[in-house]
Length: 212
Ligand code: ADP
Ligand code: FDM
Ligand code: MG
Image (tube, rainbow, N blue to C red; front, side, top):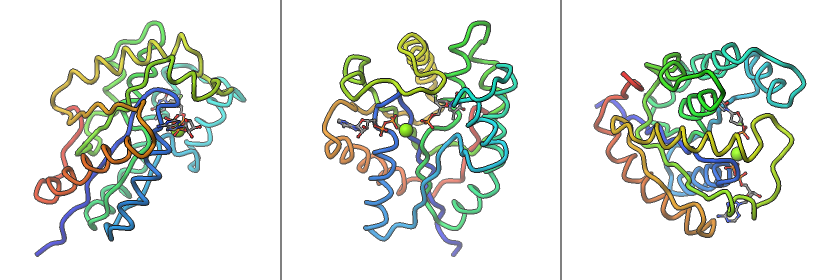
């Protein structure tokens, strides 16, 4: 029998919701239970395209808004062959941000509609589970100040949150909203339990295509 495929697990959420903390913890727990697992993040700043994006986010360079949107998408597409290979080999991927951040952030800019923003990512590997770490702006503020990068302002983050809410109405995606205001441990337990279910289900299902 062919080996069972890994699951594609995505964490999304507002700035300081705990995505990176929870991705790391989830990978650690799955590793300890003997599950083949790897972490990925988008943007992946290590590639040539990722370096252009990183310089834009750090405000070291400017890029036209449509152009940078397409670069974020291209940064996902360039990793698709690797993602598919890993998933087929039975490795579960835990991903820090994905196409949902892509659509939410660009469509929060003036003059962009959500539908246009989704198009370049149509057909990407579809996550088996997308967990949205929900945290109020007041609670996020308790976790420290905004950083120095582009997009890190409360006005913009509020617009992004509204776009995420629109994206979460799409029932073709397996969304789970996670209360990110709990302790790191409690959030982790919640995330780990949803992940175990998704891994078990994904084993017997083909990998889907996003937004098709
Ligand atoms: P994100 O990747 O979503 O921006 P991080 O994982 O980097 O968020 O966490 C942002 C900050 O909040 C870090 O200082 C982290 O230690 C802290 N943090 C993360 N999760 C929690 C939590 N559940 N409770 C309190 N602080 C947290
Ligand atoms: N971001 C992230 C986008 O604007 N589009 C995308 O497609 C993705 C994946 O980049 F402000 C934004 C979201 C955030 C920044 O920050 C990446 P982190 O701290 O590396 O997650
Ligand atoms: Mg992060």
